[in-house]
Structures are given as C-alpha cells and as structure tokens.
Length: 70
Ligand code: SF4
Ligand code: SF4
Image 1 (cartoon, rainbow, N blue to C red):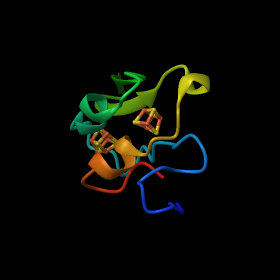
Image 2: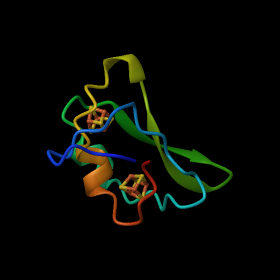
Image 3: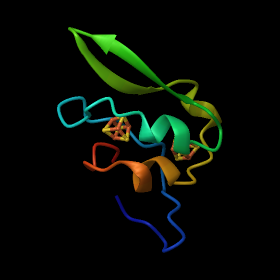
C-alpha cells in the first residue's frame, strides 16, 4: 500500500487472513479501536469492525509484524 510518509494510508486496510497470526498488535495500535480478534477455523484473525469509522491513520499497518494489513 502506498503511504505519504506519515504512515497514513489511502484506503481502509484489509487483513490477509493467510498471513495474520492473530498476534493482536494491530488491535492495540488502532487509534479508533476498530480492530478485534476473532476465531475462525481454530485460527485467530484480526477483523476491522465498522470500517466506515477508519481514519486511514495507518497505525495498524505499521504495527503488523508480518505485513498482513495491506
Ligand atoms: S488505519 Fe488507523 S483507524 Fe484504520 S483500522 Fe488501521 S489503525 Fe484503525
Ligand atoms: S498485527 Fe498483523 S498479524 Fe497481528 S493480529 Fe494484526 S493483522 Fe494479524
């Protein structure tokens, strides 16, 4: 995803469910508290709830250690 150097992103990030390990760093990082961890098929994944409230700050993208938020 392109950024402008501030870390901001140009659209609401999406979670790559294959890459996401469910570590929860993005949950802690989200300034708007939009991200939760949910279990699907015995694997925890990040889910962005209420994406219309996302301010595209990019903090979740920066926080993810495996680049699962793009
Ligand atoms: S871009 Fe910012 S507001 Fe949007 S989900 Fe990520 S951390 Fe939350
Ligand atoms: S920081 Fe990345 S790997 Fe960790 S829960 Fe969020 S999307 Fe998944």
